[in-house]
Length: 560
Ligand code: ISL
Image (cartoon, rainbow, N blue to C red; front, top):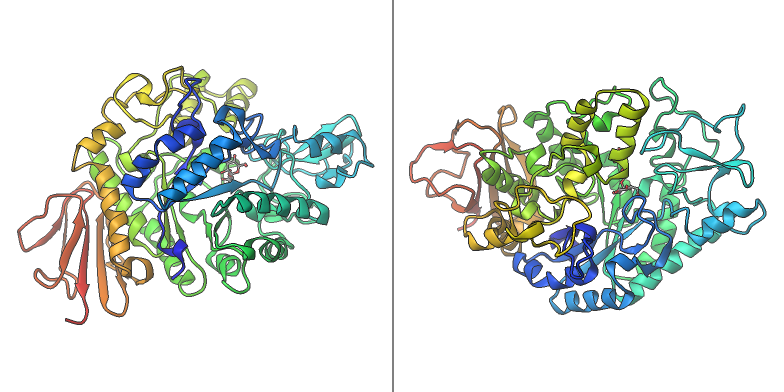
């Protein structure tokens, strides 16, 4: 079995992880300093969000030099040291690969915009205007048009994200070779793979048709740039030229991909990647008919979550491989979104962790989730840092005169900064994240929720994660077992088995705040199976009656 199927990945957002030089910004030495902590958690792989040189319009997702480290994060020597120290502990490191766009401050773009005859012109996507306006009605993910007019050559360039993130033109073979060369550079240093940013946006429909989308001036034209006509060809080329020469973990961020599409991308022969991040469960609590679905929040239901996750389990089995995640740096904290961040914070954080670690696929832990960090409610827009949040507020409130309170509430529920507040290490000043002024405010709940407290408490969320990670190593059924849903109609309980040749695992998850009385599933009567892990003290009674947010994992040997 490939190592990346057996691994647990821990995602680090370096800016908010740990600051060693007091400038209020996390750094690479901060990651190195916490390797022992990560070793205690026992994760196998670290995914570093972008650490390359960047003007930070979008916190490193706007790269101005792929071969240099962002000075705020340290130097290339710091990076080499981190990689060596991690490897010495048996921890692998994957990098973020952001190649759908660069920063507008990248020398390629600087040269490209100078003249239509620059050899770099065609590294980006330029079009003339239409009737004195943008070439089409495509909207940017961060608001406004996806085209920006550049007076130097009287043309528009495409930016699916901020206007400081011009899209690269993958149609250009010279550009593709530049990217492969850069990938070899990092892989040559010994990095163990890539998380590929917005990878299924690389191929745009060449005629750039108008978006069908919502009425209104601009609309995000997903139907014209997700899973485009040449995507698989590009990725197969990347595999041939780069990926196949190393032993790597590759995971592509791929919104709008269904299981069949994922199977195509991750098929070991025809595909190119090990796995993708799918988005179906991230859209569960949004209103797709709204012009800005991302900022809406509608109640989600367990039956829907179960259907989505079950579909991915079943349809990808034996064809590709799943990645398992409930949060990352772009979405709210999972305990606030899918659990209960009040009274049941600890049991619900453990319940979600159980789900994350017992489905088939590779689990991704987002920093801070292992101590049950929650969303934050900043009181004023000035406390927010995320370009997406700031643009949204500007559009809603400043430009359209909307209600500031309502817009702030949307940021509280859905904003990306929920996930980006500093990692809470101690109950001391700034949660022990920095001795300086943190670049973004610390969540005020840090005196209660922090690593120091978690490590000291044997019942903490942290030690529960560590137990889950170890169980995965001890019981191959967690990696390879076939998934089968039980209790398909239960309103609050998600129950499933995972079965391989000699073992069956039973997972019971009560997503409700009420008790749930169940019949014992076949083969799991008291005495027939072993309770491997649970988030409440074991009950001696013989009835099966799950407490609020209770999670249990049982194991049964199939041949005595
Ligand atoms: O299209 C989406 C959902 O349908 C978006 O969520 C989109 O996939 C997402 O915003 C892409 O995120 C990644 O690329 C961005 C960057 O800001 C994010 O932090 C990164 O994870 C641009 O590089």
